Length: 114
Image 1 (spheres, one colour):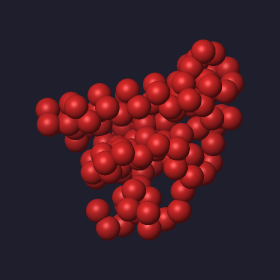
Image 2 (cartoon, one colour):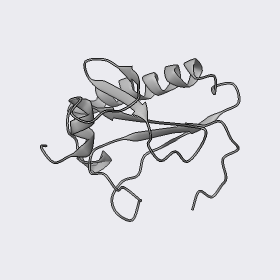
Image 3 (cartoon, rainbow, N blue to C red):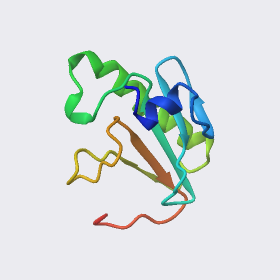
C-alpha cells in the first residue's frame, strides 16, 4: 500500500530504529513510546488489521508472536514481564491501518488498560 507509513518503514523509505528483521517481519522502536521498552512488530506484507487475517496468515502470526518473545528476552524484559497489544479498528484504538503488535515493558502495566 503506497501511502501506508508502516509499509514505507518496511521498505526502508522511512528511517526507523530496527530491532529485528527477517524476510516476513520487521520490528522497530515506537517513536512515541508508552513504556521504557516499546517495540512495534509488523508483517512486511500489508494486512489492514487482525480482522483481515485469514487461514493463510496462521504461520505468519505465530512467527510474529515467537519473535516478540525472543526480542523481549534479548531486551531483558522477559523476566519481569511485558505486555503485547494489538489494537483493532477505531474503537479498539488502531491508528495505523497495518496489522501491528506492540511489545511494551520496563515498567508496571496497569489494568484495565483504558
